[in-house]
Length: 470
Image 1: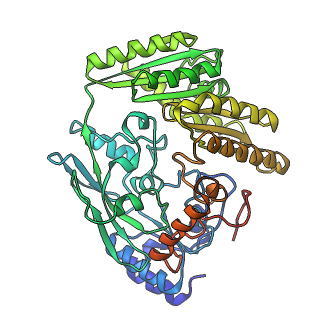
Image 2: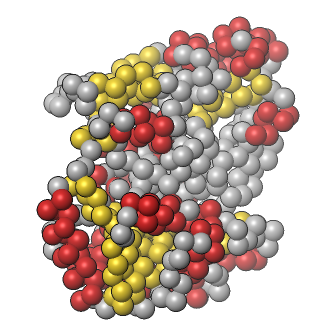
């Protein structure tokens, strides 16, 4: 609990209106988008600038008060659930685009900027910020950086990490550092920028970011390929890449996902096929035409029963929107929806899809699979009910086996969702004891009092999901 004295010190920093320790206020920030995790913070604080963040951190470090920096809470690993109490930092005041630099092709923002607002702002100037997580309408740049978010365009353009050029970070002792810059080359010291990207708020608090922009692609086309064979669809993905074509988007949806998404969006998606591939390419018109033609040929060679190119941007946008709505659509099926992101090398997609289906059958659970097939990042999703403990145990065993299979195939336990609390028990499977020890050494050096988002990334003794309440 936060003492009265400490509370008054924090209020003196941010103002009474930016400090909330009411039951209702704390309840709002007691959970994120991850099922089965909830824990009340002691207070919610909204700083107005970097100086206030620094002063808050100094107080918290002195009194060993946990700090959880939070964006919109869309993460799927319980990364922003305040499992050890303390304060949740929100950035509703630090939500400005500070500069769009057209000479250096960069944009500098505060952490509370909504991803889609940033994308629209730079596109108005003919520039392009590629990272596009499905939650981009509400997710924040600070959250994207903390989780190293991906998106539908990740195959061709990479993930958030690939566009972060510089950061302003408040460390656990309140010091403010700047990393990187508007530079094409910079090898002065350790790459601290990369260290903080994807660190899930466990090493410091990001208060400003400079991001790389690129010119807008000249043109774009979208195609839908339909299959009656899941493995044929997966083989098409591998064959497209093997033919040295890197599409902007190469997404996979299986039949159970298609049925639910169509019921939700009602845009005319086919539901009588086993799988679809949503494929996009952008760039110079002649390159787009050539690549789309070749990819259509590959899909047909791999037993696609239909290959259709969208005839308008409106039609293409409807297809993209349908894919982005997959989680929302699936969430309508049962009270609890558990979405994961087992990732494998592209060449192993067919094996992974087959394994997911076999594991679902083994444990008698329903698993719908969709995801970024082009970069090997699949999202097996299970509609279930947290109140049915027997079924939840089977779901947990199924996902543990899915993670193990992904690692066996040369993959990882998470491609873009992060580790947080939910994946922490499985991290050693991927990194080994030595890898965990190296990470802990970094954590202890930067945050010796363990106030920065404690309880995340590093596993507790249990390997099961738990509901944590305070």
